[in-house]
Image 1 (cartoon, rainbow, N blue to C red):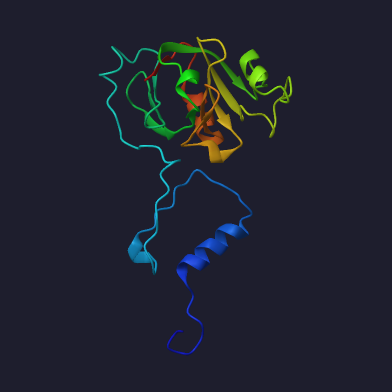
Image 2 (tube, one colour):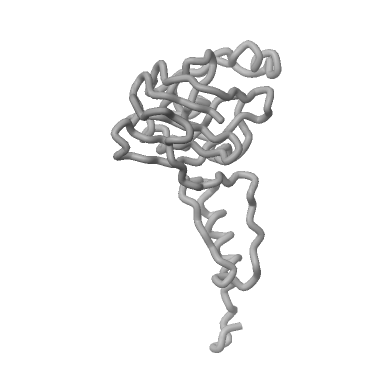
Length: 198
């Protein structure tokens, strides 16, 4: 109770009810709450948090010709450097579910598609025969709003409409970003940009 006799509002209850009122809407913003701001300590969920640490490009690329994208599977983060070093971006990402679905090494962006369509790979269809054979652009498309096709068949850096996947091991091999982040990366990246997955 407060000093005037009215019930004291618990901040955790208020924050929780506010999130529920949003009806499950998710945004890429990460709210940070310290334990001094609430009545009880909170437990941090780490399973879908990317490791946000800035990196220098030099240990990974001999030059930035064409721009460079580094995908760090372990930290679930995508780094981008422009060719002239004027732009550096760091994005949280989803990564493959397991090691057998993970590809590492050097490739490049070979195609860019706004409003991509999707079809499961033969291996996906074998594992999930109930999946549709094709999904056109739109809110049900697992590739989100934009896709950067890599030199390896079936591998892409793309958006997702399911924001719960970001920061998690949740893909069948591709690297997923929030739609607003892939839209930005899409605009910054040209065909031929270097890509390294580590």
